Length: 623
Ligand SMILES: *[C@@H]1O[C@H](CO)[C@@H](O)[C@H](O)[C@H]1NC(C)=O
Ligand SMILES: *[C@@H]1O[C@H](CO)[C@@H](O)[C@H](O)[C@H]1NC(C)=O
Ligand SMILES: *[C@@H]1O[C@H](CO)[C@@H](O)[C@H](O)[C@H]1NC(C)=O
Ligand SMILES: *[C@@H]1O[C@H](CO)[C@@H](O)[C@H](O)[C@H]1NC(C)=O
Ligand SMILES: *[C@@H]1O[C@H](CO)[C@@H](O)[C@H](O)[C@H]1NC(C)=O
Ligand SMILES: *[C@@H]1O[C@H](CO)[C@@H](O)[C@H](O)[C@H]1NC(C)=O
Ligand SMILES: *[C@@H]1O[C@H](CO)[C@@H](O)[C@H](O)[C@H]1NC(C)=O
Ligand SMILES: *[C@@H]1O[C@H](CO)[C@@H](O)[C@H](O)[C@H]1NC(C)=O
Ligand SMILES: *[C@@H]1O[C@H](CO)[C@@H](O)[C@H](O)[C@H]1NC(C)=O
Ligand SMILES: *[C@@H]1O[C@H](CO)[C@@H](O)[C@H](O)[C@H]1NC(C)=O
Ligand SMILES: *[C@@H]1O[C@H](CO)[C@@H](O)[C@H](O)[C@H]1NC(C)=O
Ligand SMILES: *[C@@H]1O[C@H](CO)[C@@H](O)[C@H](O)[C@H]1NC(C)=O
Ligand SMILES: [Cu+2]
Image (cartoon, rainbow, N blue to C red; front, side, top):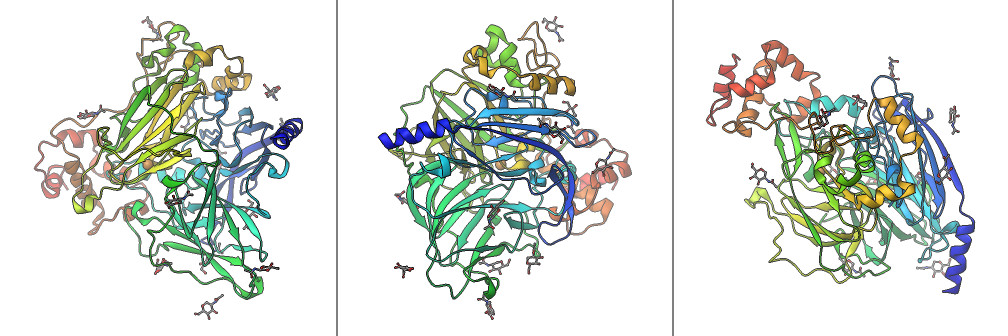
C-alpha cells in the first residue's frame, strides 16, 4: 500500500503537459500493395502518430482542418471518460460544432482516470476509414510501473480493414436509392499496423505485452498466432484476470491487450493470422482473401511464414466471461431502464437508414451540449434536444440499464462514450436462415447476471439478439451511444445520453472554451438555443432538423427493392445484379434518374400495391 501511494505521488509529480499540433490533409499511399489511393494525412504524413502519455498528463491537441472545399473534421479519443471535460469529447452535433476548413479546435483535457490501450479518430463522415486514426496508449506511472502484470517488452499492433476507394467516394453509392438493402461496401483487405505481410521480429523466451487495437470501421476479425497462446490481461483499458486462449474475436474499436511468451527455439517462424468475420459481408466476392498472413519472426533470414489453418473459428475467447482485475460487484437494480430496438429500414427516398426505436439520428442545429449550457431550467426536459436526436436525460448517480434489442440480422459493436459498462446479459444469436426470429430481452426470463460482470466500452450484440449493459450515471456530460460500424453511424444508429445536465451547467470546467465558440462561429452555427436554435422558447422546435418521411402504408420495402432492381436491369442491361457489382458502377443513381427524368419520390408514390413484381413495376415506369 505504501509503495503504491509513493508511486501515485511520483506519477502526479511527473504529470506533464503534452502538446500535439496536427493539420489534416490529403496524400497518396499504397497501404495494401494494391496501388496508391488518397489517404488523410497528419501534417502531410501518414500514418498518424501513435500517442503515448502517462496517466495524469494534460493533453493539448490542436487540430486544424487543412482540407479544402466543405470537408469538416473533428477528433475523439476513444474510451476516455473526459470527466469534467465533456466539451472535449469530439462528436460534432453532440459536444461541438464541426471544424470547417481552415479552422482549429483545441482539445485540452487531463488523462486522469484511464490507463491502457485507447485510440483516437475523426468523428466525422467516416473519415477514420481513410486513415485518420492512431493508437493512444496511457502508461500507468513512469514506464507503466503500476501495471499489475509482469512483461519484458510492449508492442502495439493495430488491425483494420482497407478499401481501394475513399469513403467520400463510397458514401454516395452506399446512401443511395440503388442500395435499398443498405449493403455495406466490401473492403479489399485486412491490414496489420497499416500494412500487409508485416514481419514482427521477436526475441526468444520473452514475454510481450501485445496491444491489439481494431482501428477499422466495419468488420470484426478473428486473430491468432500459430502455435502461440495469448493471455488476455486487459480489454478496452480495463485490466482483467488472466485468461488464456488460442484465438480472439475483435470488433472494430475494441482493444485486447495480451501476454505472449515466445519460444526458446528459434528454428522457425510462425504465422500471425487475421480473418474476416465473413457473416458481416453481404456478398463475398471471389477475389476477396478472407484471411491475411503476417509473420512472427524468430529469425528473419527464414523468411515469411506460411498461412496457419485452424479447424474451427468457434473457439475464440468469449469476452462475456472475462473478470475485471479490480473486481467490481454487479451494480444494484437499475433506477432507469432505456430500452432500444435496432432496425434498418428505408425512408421515402428509398435510402436505407438505421434506427433506434424508429428514429434515425439526425444532428440538431445546435450541438446538444450547447443546448444544455444555454437551456436554463429546461435542461432536464429531453424535448428541447429535438425529435431526432434520441436524447435521454439521466439523473445524478442513478443506475442505468441499456436494454438493446437487435431486430436486424447482422451483429453490431456498440460503443458508449464517457463510460465503461458492466455487461450483464448477452444472448445468443438467432439465425434467420433457419427460421429464427428476433428475440428481444425478456425481463421475466433471462440468464443469471454475473457476480463480477465483464466491463468494457465497446460490445457486440449477436444477430436478432439482445444485450443488457449497466452503469452508474456518475459522469456529468453529454455522451453518444452508437454503433461503431461507420456505415451504420452514417445511417443514423446513435442515441444521446445527457447525464446530470444541471451539474454540467454549474461546473466551471465544462463550459465552452474560446476555441469551441470560434469553431461554431466559423461554421455559421449557433452555440445557444434548443435543437432548432430557438433561444427564447426552448420548447419551440419549429425548424429543427428531422429525418425524412416514412414510406406511406401500402408500399412495401420488397416492392421498392423489386422496382429499384428492375430499373437498373432495364437501364444497364445487367442480367445478374450483385450489390458488389452495383457499387462498382459510378453514379448509377444519377444515370437512371436522368434517363427516366424521374424524381425518386414520384416513383415510390406511383407504386400502388404490394403485389408489384419486378416486371410490372418496370412496365409502369416505362422500362
Ligand atoms: C501549429 O503548427 C502551425 C503550422 O506549423 C503553426 O502555424 C502554429 O502556430 C502551431 N500552433 C501551435 C499551438 O503550436
Ligand atoms: C502482401 O503479399 C501479397 C501476396 O504475396 C501481395 O499480393 C501484396 O501486394 C503484399 N502486400 C504488401 C503491402 O506488401
Ligand atoms: C482540394 O484538395 C484536393 C486533394 O488535395 C485537390 O485535388 C483539389 O484540387 C483541391 N481543390 C481545391 C479547390 O483546392
Ligand atoms: C488547458 O486547460 C488547462 C486546465 O484548464 C489550462 O490551465 C490551460 O491553460 C489550457 N491550455 C490552453 C492552451 O489553453
Ligand atoms: C506497429 O507500429 C507501431 C507504430 O505505429 C510500432 O511501434 C510497432 O513496433 C509496430 N509493431 C510491429 C510488430 O512492427
Ligand atoms: C528457455 O531458456 C531459458 C534459458 O535461456 C531456460 O531458463 C528455460 O527453462 C527455457 N525454457 C524452456 C521451455 O525450455
Ligand atoms: C511454406 O510452404 C512451402 C511449401 O509447402 C515450403 O517449401 C516452405 O518451406 C514453407 N515456409 C515456411 C517458412 O515454413
Ligand atoms: C484463407 O482463405 C482462403 C480462401 O479465401 C481459404 O482457401 C483458406 O482455407 C483460408 N485459410 C484459413 C486459415 O482459413
Ligand atoms: C476464461 O474464459 C472462459 C470462457 O472463454 C471462461 O469459462 C472462464 O471462466 C474464464 N476464466 C477467467 C479466470 O476469466
Ligand atoms: C416503431 O414503429 C412501429 C410501426 O409503426 C411500431 O409498431 C413500434 O411500436 C414503434 N416502436 C417504437 C419503439 O416506437
Ligand atoms: C460542414 O459543416 C457546415 C456547418 O455545419 C455545413 O454547412 C456543411 O454542410 C458541412 N459539410 C459537409 C460536407 O457536410
Ligand atoms: C422561438 O419561439 C418563439 C416563441 O414560441 C417564437 O415566437 C419564435 O418565432 C421562435 N424563433 C425562431 C427563430 O423560430
Ligand atoms: Cu452496426
